[in-house]
Length: 449
Image (tube, rainbow, N blue to C red; front, side, top):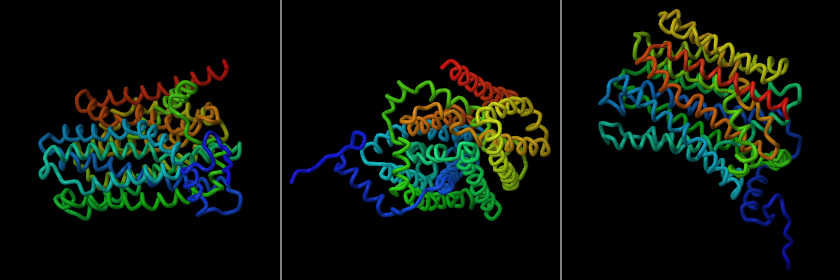
C-alpha cells in the first residue's frame, strides 16, 4: 500500500524523530485551553531549578574551591583562579545553545531538553564526587574545569521556549507582568542556595565543611534538576503546548541564518541588559568574595544578609512588572540603567564603609537588581521576526550573560584587589552606559525603519 507523505515545515510526517516526538506528546495530551498563568508555572519551575544550580556553584567558587582545588596559591589568587573556571560556563553556554538547537531540529524539543538537563545533572553530580587537589593534583582542577564547561553547555541547551511563548501569549497590557515571572527564579534560587550554605557553615566545623559538607548542596542541585526535568517535559511534551509553540513558529532555526537576518537584533538585545547582568554578580558573588578575603564578618551571617537582599530583589522584580506595563519595558530598563550608573559611584564608599556601608550596598544593590532584572530578559526581543524569536531569544540571553556577567566576579575582584574599589565603579558604570547606548540605538533604528 502506498504511503502518503505530508509536510510540516520541511519535515516529513512519517519521519522517525517526528513519530517519537508525537508519541511523547500523546502521553500527557489533554484537552483544554492553556492560560498564560499555566505557562508561567513552567517558566518559574525551570528557571528556579537552574538558578539554584547556578548559585550553588557560584557560592562554592568563593567558599570552597580556592582551598580545595588551589591550596598551593594565596587565598586571593586561589579565588581568582576559581573565578576563571567559573567563567567557563558562560563561554560554553552559547556554544551549547547552537549544538542543542541542531539536536532539536533532528530529534525534537523533548530530546533536546532531556539531553541538556541530563548533562546538567551529570556535571553537577560529578562536581559533588570530585576528589580534591590533595588527592588528584592538577587532574582535579582539569576535571572541575571540564564539568563546569559541561554545565555551560547544558544551560545553553536547556532553553525550552516557554519564556517566549509566555511573552507572546500574555495579554497585551500585561506583557511586563508576565515577563517578570520567570525572573523570580533568580532570587528564589539564590535564597535556597545561600540558605543551605549558611546552615552548613553554622552546623559544621571548618574542617567538616571543607572535607564533605560542601558537597551536599551539589547533591541537592542534582535532585532538583531531576524533578525540574519531569515537570518541564510534562509541559513541553503535550500536544496543546506543541500546537502553541508551532502556531507561534517557536522552533529552532539555523544560527547562520539567524546571524544574517537578525544579527543586529541579537547584538542590541545582549547589550540592552548589560547594566542588570553586570550588577547581578556585583551584589551576589563579588561582595561575598570581598568579605571572605578582607573582613572578619561571619560568612554565615553575611549570607543571611544577602538572603534578605534577595527578598528585596524579588519585590523589585514584581514591581518591575507593574512599572513596565505602565511606562513600557524599554523605558523601565533604560531608567534603571541610569539609576545603576548613579549607584556605581557609591560602590567604594559603601564597600569601604564598614558593616553599615556594606549592608546599605547590598540592600540598595539588590533592590536595583530586582527592578532592572525583572525586565532584562527579552526587553527588545519583539524586534525579532517571528520565525527567529525562539533561537534569537536564547542566543541573546547567552550573550548577555557572557558579556555582562560571565567575567564580572573575576574582573571586580581583580581590579579591587590590585587597583582599588573605584575601578569596580567604572566597571559597573561601563555596563550601564552600554545598556543606555543599546536602548538608544534600538529606538533610533525603530524610528528609521
